Length: 443
Image (cartoon, rainbow, N blue to C red; front, side, top):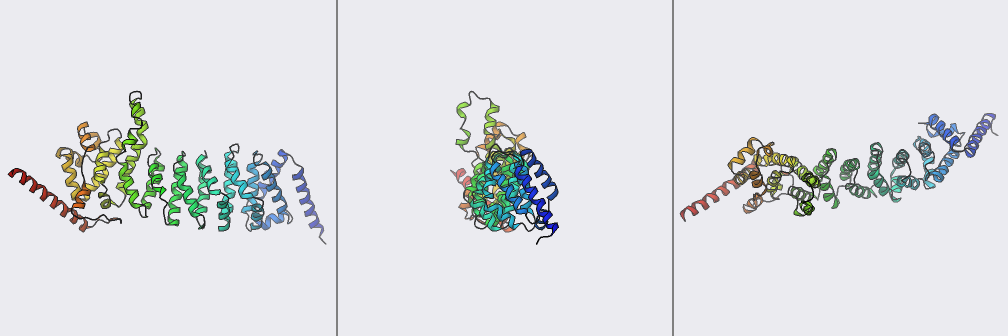
């Protein structure tokens, strides 16, 4: 037999549940407010004590109400917060199973895709998904099996709240950890986010990709084009994350395609530059420059990235010197000129063979300007000198090939031996040029 105290507790529980069942929208909103204020942070045993061992009876009502009303958004934020109190309680595995058995994950994912639902409500849905994902591997797999990665990634791309987007990043980061069965799915979803229109989503995706890349260990071929295109952004925080990811990616199997892609960006393709040529007669120069700006931003970012990478000798085989000089001649974008000049300065100071060919191509006057005003060279040169840079035919790669310097696919560590080898090549190039001149004079 139950005690009088227990009977009183059960009576209070039944009265509370009856009040909920008979309540309208305003009354339920009031009940939810009280529940959230008095039960936040409680453990599972404490919730059971609060509800006389019948907490699941109230949870079932919350879940039922959610499934019936989530499309209308009625009391949605408070409903989700109340369910969150159950799912976040210590020892809440029983509550979690009850929520999942009635399709809780699918409901939460559907909320993310509804246009009429408020951003705050969707953020609460993301927080519940975080709780589920953090409960273990099988729950992460359940989210992924419910097409969760796609729904979550799409929401990240369209969300207007940076705070909400950061919560989504936490969820995606959780899904990529301890989830070997579906970690590649999350990885591909992050790559698919890179072309999206939201700078914050791009930034967060790039940050999470760095983590995912180290976990997965292999790359997807599409990552190269996607991350190189991101370099065309006007948002410096996004560009920074892209460059940081590139620094990691050069240690993987996409190294060669990534380095070649960076060098290619230094000289925008004819196709890119001629897209709007028919409009030249009608569009103002400012509009034309704005249209070409992403290409120029890519060019400048590529010059900076090349300077930051420890792949100098390897990139000599890709005609990087020729491309850097061409970028220095781009009078339409001073930042491209400045960054290309700084990077070329490093190559000239590091490799005597590069110094020799750059000096010869520039001519003594322009070369001295370059040595004295490296970073500010773009402010010192005239249109003829800019044309000299753009039309340069420097081909250090050909010289290296001619004298048998192999292209190494590993990161270069410059030591005296490397520099001596380059000096050795320069010596023979000079000797050959001298012989040619002597032969010409005899003729």
